[in-house]
Image 1 (cartoon, rainbow, N blue to C red):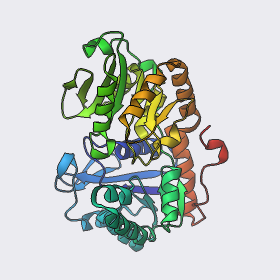
Image 2 (image 1 turned 60 degrees about the vertical axis):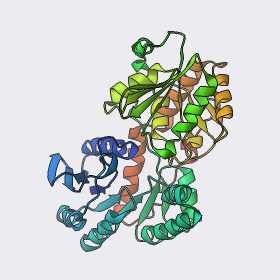
Image 3 (image 1 turned 45 degrees about the vertical axis):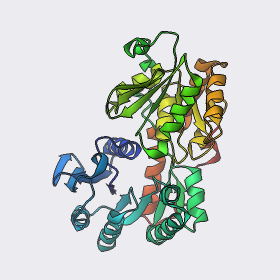
Length: 376
C-alpha cells in the first residue's frame, strides 16, 4: 500500500497537524508493505527526508506557505502514483489532489482537522459560515472518506449532509510525553517561588485559543497562581503572574515544562480534537478546559475539570477548586486514560485498517470507535 498525505498546515511553528503527520510517517515507515509519501510546502522543490517532499510555495503569515502553482502538486502525486491520497486541509490543494486521484485511480481521504465553517462564522458572521458549509459539502462529496478527529466534528459533518464520515482520534507519543519528564527546578528557572501554583498552556497564540480569557482569569486569581504560556514570539513577563516563553519545537523540552506544572489549562472553544490536551494528560497532569469544542470529550472529573465558556470568574473558580483535590491522583488517572485509548500506535493501527479497506473499496465509514474505545 502506498499512501500520500498532502497539506498546507506544515510550518516551523505549526501545531497538531504537523505532529500528526510526522508521527504517522514514522509509524508507517516501520510497517511491512506500506509506503508513505508526505507532500508539504517549502521554499523550493526538494526531498528533505525519505518520503518527505517539499514543493515550492511563497511564504505568508506565521511561516506558512501557500502554493501559487498547485498543478505542481498534482503532477507530483501523479508521478508518485499512491493507492490512497489523504488531504489535510479543505483549500485549493484539495481540488488538485482530487484531480490527481482521478487520473491515477487512487482512493481519497479528507481529514477535517479544522472546523472552517464555525471559525469563519465567529469571525465574519453566520452568512459566511453557511457559505463555508455549502463549500465543504461540495468538496467532501468528492472524497471516498472523511475522517473527523472527534465525535463532535463527525456529528457536525453528518448534520451538514456529509456521508462517509468516520471518527479517527489523534494520539500522543507516550514515551516523549511522560510523567518522568517532571522537573522540580522549573519554578526556579522561571524566577518563581517554590510555593507557586503553576499552570501551563502550550499552543499558538491565535485568536481561537482565547488567550485574553486566560489573562483575565489569572488577573482574578492573583498570587500564588501563575500562568506559563508556551508559544509566544519571545520570552516575556506579561504581568506579575503570567509568563510567556517562545514556541518550543523540541517535544522533549515541551514535555518537561508541561509535566513540571501543576495542571494544564485550555480556554479554546473551537478545538476539533485537542492534541495538546492529550499530551498534557500523557505527562500525568490534570487538565482544565471549557464545556465547548472537542476538548470536552477528553476531560471529565476523574482527570481534571470543565468550566463554563466565556466566563473568567467561572474559570478562576474551577482552577481554585482543582487545588482542593489530589492533583497527582488526577494526573495518574489522566495518564492511564492515554495509555488505554490515545497512543499514536493505537490511533494509527486503527487508521491503517481503514486504509486497507479503502484500498479494496470496502465500506469504511461505519468503522467508528467501538464502545470499548470510548472515553471511560
